[in-house]
Amino acid sequence: MKVYCLCFILVFAGVAYSQTGPQFGPPSAAGRVIADPPTGGVVSPTFSEDELEIIFESLGTIWRAQRESTSVPFENPAPIPELNAADFSEERPFLTPDGLGLYFMRSKGGFFASRKLYYAHRWSPSLSFLTPKEVGIEGVERFNGALGSVSADELTAFLEIVQPDSSSTLPNQTDIALATRSDVSEKFGMWKFLPEISTDNYERGPSIYRDDRNLYFSAVGVGVPGFIYWSVREDKHSPFSPPALVQGINSGGVVNRDPFIAFPGSRLYYVRNNELVFSNRILTATYKIGEGHGLSGRRVRVPIIMNTPEPDAILFDVPVFFNPNLLTLERVIPAPSLGEESVEITLLSQGRYRILYQSQNPLLGDGSDEEVFDLEFLINSGTPPSQIAIASGGTFRLNRIMVSPPAESGRVVVEQGPNYPPASIIKIR
Image 1: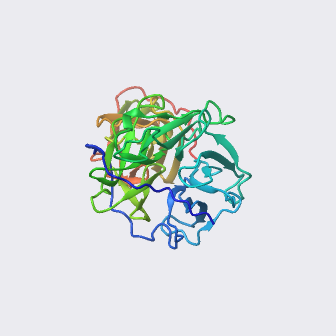
Image 2: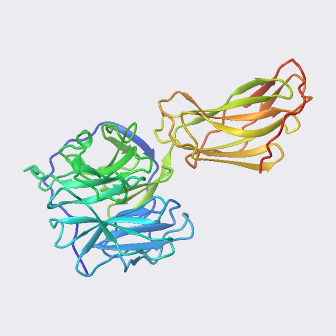
Image 3: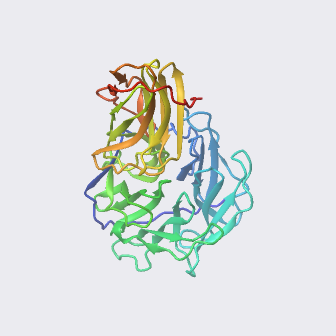
């Protein structure tokens, strides 16, 4: 059994960050994520998108466990035999969003050994992984660092790298770097540091969210015993913002490390004082239902609007109801700037619908009103001039997290004019 450990003896020297990041609730109790973790502890936990599978490292061996529901802990974790070689240490796994690919490091001889990045594929989460293949890092004779995460398109690897000229006051200091490739058939090329988030602190475990914009990582330094930070960028070609302290989980008496943000940003897993825990996201957001004007027999659009400072708002869950004798819901039209990943329209009962919309791009998150999508209605023929309420009954959610319902109902104003004959109706399934 391999017993190499990614450890450092630290003489603290560093700087603390001053900005604020996303807000999370208190950590779960120990054992709420893994009921019976291995005695070697948990390093670099990574989860399937539904959070029903966990893969992690423990003392140079990659382990796996499954569960039936996110409301219960994982039980009976076990090493993955097809990934663990007898003569090597396997470290820092990261699961792709589809759950079919796993990236990890392989080394021989402890932390200061040269490492290589590997990839293993499986055809289904219920099947074994195929033989791993080396995928980098190219352009360097001796790679001294570790994997943090890989972007959703699998073209960028986020790494922690030991500085070639580590500070004398912080031996073996690590900083966050990335390595890229132009196609998944290639190996990752030479890494480069991210100067905008590299400081005199010891930084590790960079975990990129699937949008390739939001980055979480941990840091140790003066006044920073082990805190988790966050940074965001406009797009994959832009620099990251200055690091901000994640709110609600950091304090002077604990050491936090190895963050993993679950899709769609609603839960953060991390190791707290050597116990794997999670914290649920706390969001600030309000929905509004707008107003539409039209004539009987014609179509009208009613906007759904959101106001939020959150940088990763992409999953919108909106219940609405209205008088089906006066209106027919025909379709949902996403805002052009957001794009459409998916739209689900569920008929709950006559005139009551649930709209679940996932955008390709997040809202700006600048605290201003932003249109999310339009509800397109047909004003049924024969509807007299009137005001028809678009009510907001039900549970509104953003990124699967419950938020306050709109303060007021929306409405369709049927104006005085010709009574047009019925238009074609698209049946909602």
